[in-house]
Image 1 (cartoon, one colour):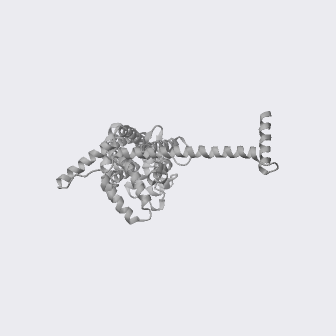
Image 2 (image 1 turned 45 degrees about the vertical axis):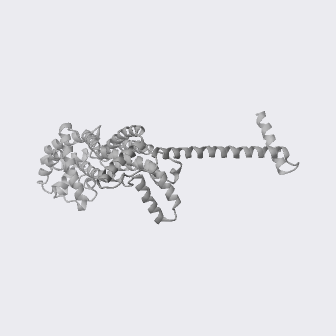
Image 3 (image 1 turned 120 degrees about the vertical axis):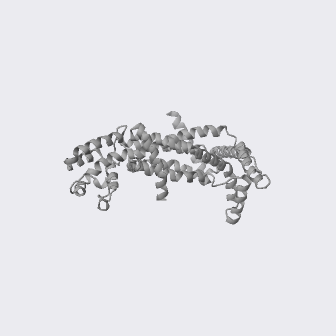
Length: 401
């Protein structure tokens, strides 16, 4: 998996390098980069959304089978397979686009987390420092005197290889402004070289006053705007996606619906945690991804509102039948009208709501009639008559107030 990510990461790094050559700012480059990648993945996003809408249409039938054959798993599996065949529905159809996107997204994280390793136009400024630095006497011991150097070395100072130029570039990439200053003080012979390149690195890493290579951390600061924006944009994005799914009265028992509700809560919190602990550049990417996803989802929602599910099924069925015709097979048919199925579900929901309201009104009326009876027909000296006296006293007392 690591090798696959490396192969995917290289062309992504080349694209990032090309964009940086025009923009000359790390933060802005990430935003444009995210937009381009999301647009390239948009067809897969559309396919996934359509598959999810189709799943929502078939879900009530699946739920009915699961309830009917809850104690007979073998029959349930057979019936579910028959349902998928009749409806011409592939339950894994929505997973395939996600599986295709996953390695790309993981490779994106890898590139953005370590920009110098994949972007030559950025790497050159770190090499300008590392090359003369490794020629200084006792440079490895002196580097360990820098404040919080362990953090820049990945938290494992004893296992860090100070003789590896690539590792030193990774270390310098995580340096703060104060650490660059300490580096100059420790190596006065190359102080000018360090200062000149550090100034370029700081300028290209600064976006909206924030250092893209530094993590916001757990100490409250202006940098916390990144995890906050990440959480808010992620919540809105997840909410839009879940809001696009038709709800039914069975949602309380529907694993898919419950999963979406859980994601609405957990994903924003997870986003905030990632963006606090990871470099701010990764947080900018996360926010940009969520914002672009929100825009995409709004467009898709508007499109899906106008799309007739039966027409969508008919088009898919037409494609299936063309393939079947080439194989010499008879045309397939969908056994039930999708729109009618959804209307039936909504009608059943409305019926249940009305029945619940009637039940509540009936109970309230029974309580009221029971109270009147005991207030007027209670025997003198009985508990009911005493309760009635107390109630009348309270009513009279309230009126005097």
